[in-house]
Image (cartoon, rainbow, N blue to C red; front, top):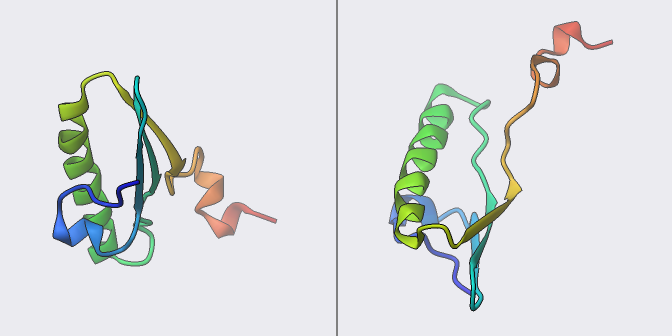
Length: 83
């Protein structure tokens, strides 16, 4: 098991679990939440950008699961429209 994506900025929050299997590499990722502040949103987007580039080295051998911290609709974000 590995917990690094070779980036000190992103590795320090413990968001990655990587397991290497014969035919694929499994990543369980707890993606950053960007809702707390503009700084955290920036961090989240930089994490995504870095992760995409990092994963390219593995070609088609990657399976990603985890908590993406992304809602499928605005209802999940906007408390004013919930009852």
